[in-house]
Structures are given as C-alpha cells and as structure tokens.
Amino acid sequence: MVHRPLSLQQALELKRALGARGVPVAGGTDLIVGIRKGRPAPAEMIDLSLVPDLDGIERVGDQLRVGARVSHARLEVMDLGALAAACETVGGPQIRNLGTIGGQLGTASPAGDVSVALVALDATVELASVDGRRTLPLCDFFVGPGRTVLRPDELVLAVTVPLNRRSAFYKIGKREAVAISLLMAAVSVDAHGHVAIGIGCAAPVPMRARDAEASLRTHGWSAESIDAAAALVSAEVRPISDHRGSADYRRAMAGAVVRRLLTQLWREGAPAASRIGADGARGTA
Image 1 (cartoon, helix red, strand yellow):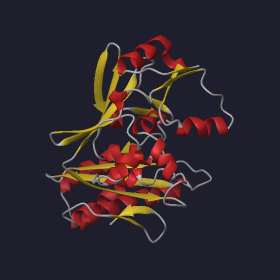
Image 2: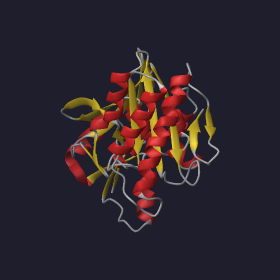
Image 3: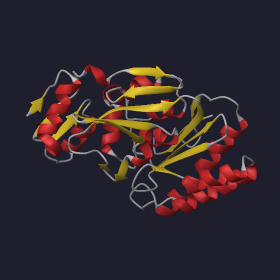
C-alpha cells in the first residue's frame, strides 16, 4: 500500500503509526534497483513526493540547509565544491533527477559518493518524529552497511552544510558515473586550516579519517605532513576485497587519493573546477 501524505505532519504521523514497516520513498531509485534484483517491494510505502517541507534549499548564515527531497541534479550545478562534484557522479541524468539526498543517506551505502562528500564537509543531519527534531553530525548517522541511527518513527528532514570550507572530491571507478565506485574520497578545509577527510568503499560506513585529520592539526600543512596524513589514511581504512578490487588496492588508493586532494587544496587558494582524471576517475582540479 502506498500512502501519500500532503504535509510533513501527516508524513510523521504515518511513520509513527507504521514504524519500520513504513518505508519512505521519494525518487525510488534504490527501491527499483532492489525490486529488479528480486527483493520484495515494501508492503507499506510513504510517498514523500507531495510533502513541500522537504524540497527546499536555504542559506542560513554561513551554512546551507538542503531538504531531504532535493535531487542530486539540483546540487550538481551549484558552486558547492565536493558536494556538487559528488552529485555529478551519481548514476545517469535520469537517476540524478530522481534520486534525492535523503534517499542516499537512508540507503547508508559505504559506496555513497554524496554521503562521503557530506561527511568530508562536516555536515549535520536533521531528523524528525512527531515528538520533535534532533540534529547530529552526519558521520555519526551511519552505523553499518544499510544501517543508520534513524528510529522507526523518524524521517530525515535535511542536511546542513557549512559554506566556509574549500573542498574537493575524487572517485575511482570504471566510469565517471553510473558504475559503483571502487574508492572515493573528499577533503575540505576551513579558513583556519582545519581539515575534514571523508572516504568511501573503505569501511562499513562512509568514514572520517580522524587520525589523518589530527596529524594535520598537529603538524600543519607541508608536503611532509601531507605524506604523513596519507600514510595514516591507508592505515586507518578497513576495506574489503570484492569483484571490483582488492582490499590492498583500496588501502593504497585511499592514501594516494587523499594525498592528491590535500595537495590540491594546499596549493590552491580557491575551489577548483571539476574535471575527468586521465585514468577515467572523477575529480577536481
């Protein structure tokens, strides 16, 4: 059964009534893929496409609040550094027009390009139920493959992204889009030189490279400190081997990609334009 609430309050009341059985749907891109792979369709779906409160993009001071129903296509054309570059790698144009930020977060895939960019941008996520709202760092939202801290009666409302951070994103995959990433990373830095590093396909969740970040805070920015941070990234990640690549390859590439992005942000004083890497990977330069 498909429920079509017309307001956020109706959606939250439905989520309370249905609990975990009530699966929220907006673009439905991951849902359709699952059904095509033989998974049964949810018995109870909450169609959020008519809820107006979830599709806004609003600047609040030095932050951007992005509603959960905002599509990747809307963000890929904005001047948002790593976030725009990551959105541009999600599927093809049709998928990017349908797929939403909330959907990507709710899927909780370790290979979520946009999730990794948001983690590296030090984003926060806003959750809601009929009892109220709560906000937490996005890196604390994911707890395992396909698992989040969302309670059965909660929905993702929005993510909030700081605008005072320069950032860059790079993806290694067979194609710049459509194909699932083999490894991706994003790095951001604020006006004080504080770095946040996000890595995907290298752990059970989109992860922050905390050891590397701490090393850069302690030692500052230099070619030597960047090399040290990259080595810490390779030691910190926990990749697996699968048909796309080995754990050893992912571990090595995690350090190499982070070194590349840190060096770029160190050398450049402004966010750079997106490009395709010579190896076919998606990046910024």
